[in-house]
Image (cartoon, rainbow, N blue to C red; front, top):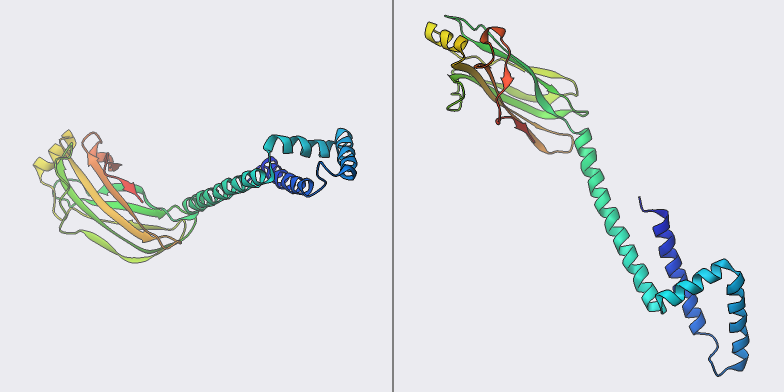
Length: 241
């Protein structure tokens, strides 16, 4: 909001401009009858605080065009400030009200020799408004730890159909490796040399019609005990718009 003192200063400047115009249209130095009212005005200024304020400001600011120019410049600055503030408030409101479709939990299951690992990825709209046209895909792969390549897409890569997601509502993705683990892979997973990775993307449209996306890369194994089944975010490959 514009400070009240700034508004008062602008109004005072405009008023002083009008006062000076009125004085300049009055008596001249050669008009003897016009000198007495000017003397009386000065006497009133000695006793009237408002008149004294206007008289002092007039002598400080100069002639009426300068006062009007100052008032115009002040109004321009205030207007620009209000426009900037308005845009900032719109951006803040959008950030507070938009949908946020994010991964809230992830686990890996069926990890053992001869078993086909699968993940349970919970995706939740943590925002205050619905998300529309929500779609997502997820893929599981196995690689060394630290990661050397992007996890390959498994034969059972999952893509969920597009649908709306209300605030607080969840969906689940369950990508699998598509093949069973052998003895060597299981030993390397338990030794922390290998890890199971899940990469995915969530796409949706928020209430303002803006297309959003969330990218994620999760892993189990490596420094995380594979038998716990907990998946964690892999550094540097997670983000959202």
